[in-house]
Image (tube, rainbow, N blue to C red; front, side, top):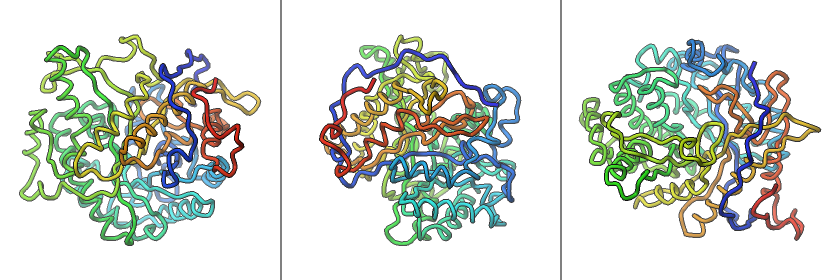
Length: 482
């Protein structure tokens, strides 16, 4: 079974205190939520007609997942969703981002529909609405049907059509009740980690596979958007999400480090957003991307852009970049946080809340950028086990507060960011890292599946209380809550 960490690191508190704030400071139109993903929480991967996904296969490969763990049970959200939605409603969180498992709806990825899978997502959506929670649905959060991987997966150009068929199916079934849709979750991660580095499903390690998957994913995010637009009622909002990290050179006065940072930025932050905005791939700053032309066909350049209603910005950290002669084509390496003597999370990521502000500013700087939503942001720290119905997690609480201070900073400067989703609602299966990293506002004891709201979750609950519910003493939060 999943393990837990009992040792607590020194709590992190921001070195620069954010201004105090309350919910009203963000404006009445600001959207507050929490985020999740199907494979990480649902469990029951072989239940009621669901087909296997690439993650169901990947977790069985020796040495790929820390401790040999897997998402077979995860948080059992597939069965426990009514109680979990009750808990979310009790916390006063008005928006829930979740993903559909493609192979639960289309077991072979295309063709035959699994009615039980469609019924499940319909019940989940209706359950949200009955509790006053607005559903935000992500079509693809990394769990490609295994049957499609056996046909080449993201390296097969046909995946563009497969995704569009899936998008059309969900939109026609749920579009009358789901107002917000996202096409892809972090395409840079599932193409890079899954096809170049081999550390995520499907476990490929090939530059060719990465380039093919990259071009097909860039096409799919646009064509998926068009499929949704054609099937959804007028007024539905369509977006897609991007991973990003604020990048700084190890030596600001060193030309090679500065150039390496520019190349890393083209790869990690710009590779998918710029084609979507009609700017093409950032080949000028990363020449290896010219090899993407091997996988293109006539007319692809015109198919890459799509007029998204919003872009999802997903940020957790910054990275410090140094020139490296040992990394061909990129000629850059990222210096780990632990080597730099800075605070870092269970994931090894530097604690740097200002990264979120800088990335919002970078995405907003595109002349044709739509509005922005922070669709993921959070931190994994080792939590103590629940005691007397409480989990104390001051480091996570301080981190979230500092990041929201950066979002407010961006809004006050006029940047078009109008939503924030904390990652994550509950602790969950964290991909190759297994169950050790805990991001949740709600603690999950995996052997018993007992839920306990953490202090950070209580803090978020208090923040989300309406002005009418707040006393004068509660109206503004201090910089830290120890």
